[in-house]
Amino acid sequence: MSNDALDSNPPNADYHLSNHGSDWLWAVFALFGLSLLAVIGWTFATRRGTRLFHQIAIVVLLTGAISYFSMASDLGATPVPVEFRGNGTRQIWFVRYIQWFITLPLLLLGLLLAIGLPLSDILTTLFMAIVLVVTGLVGALVPSTYKWGYYVFGLVALFYIWYVLLWHGHRTTFAAGDRTTFAAGDRTTFAPGDRARSGHRLSAYYLSFLLMLYPIAWACSEGGNVISVTSEMIWYGILDLLAGPVFLFWFLFKLRGVDHSTFGSQSGKYTDSNMAPGATTTAQRAGAGPASTANGVGAGPANGATTSPVMGAGSGTYPPSAAHGAQDALAV
Image 1 (tube, one colour):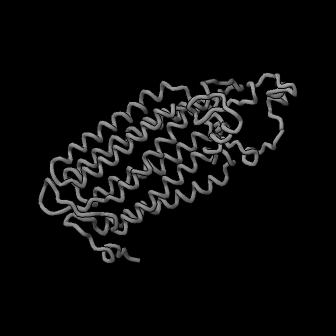
Image 2: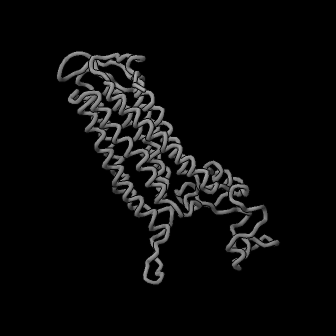
Image 3: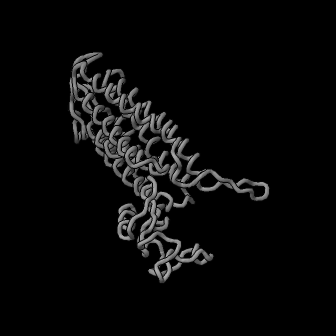
């Protein structure tokens, strides 16, 4: 079956997508779609209450699939006059920036939640990700030299993201536990804290490197009109595949076996945690005793309070209803 997307949706600019470029975009769409189905299956095979990162991956992959379906169909672009290398207009794909507006903050959110970064730092980093995407879109739509001012604003936001990923994040206590090892015969078994720590570092380096390539692609395509629209699609498509399906599968694989309750994303509902009301915990069965006695005196916090970590951003003492409410908000 031939690709008639450009016949059904004719290009609207002088520098536009070619048939071969549309074929490539359909291939990327197929990879996003297959990855989405695989992650959905993986999610259902994962115990309830530990699906937070899988569901983030589902949103990222679904958004990418919709975006690439639109671009492969030659939809979601607007003509903008070029500044360099010729006259006429070039297709600027605003649908791609809508994709990044959703997916980049979510990718960073998953990575930063896994290391237990304070909530204030997470929100600031997500805001910088939004600034990076929005300034890229506005700069691409500006036909004059002023587009490069937005480019600089985007780079400033990117430098902050690099600072968090490559320096500040490494100085944070990991939510998945401290670095411990256990000797098991001739092998050394690493605790979940090791897996989360090494996984974060590699993920941070990997994602930071990819984020460096996006501004270069922008300068050569939307900014400087150096490469064709089809070459732009190939470049961005490879980057999106590496930052989407490849990164997410590797990231989820590295988090397998990690105790998700340390992230504060464990559901407080007994139906999700398989804990009926009044059931004893492992520590209680081991002889630690309940948190409180019939006389209200015991090892637990006073006045029926309970301690619960929330979002890996530290722990505090909350009333039971507040603790369960905070956990249920993150329960998946």
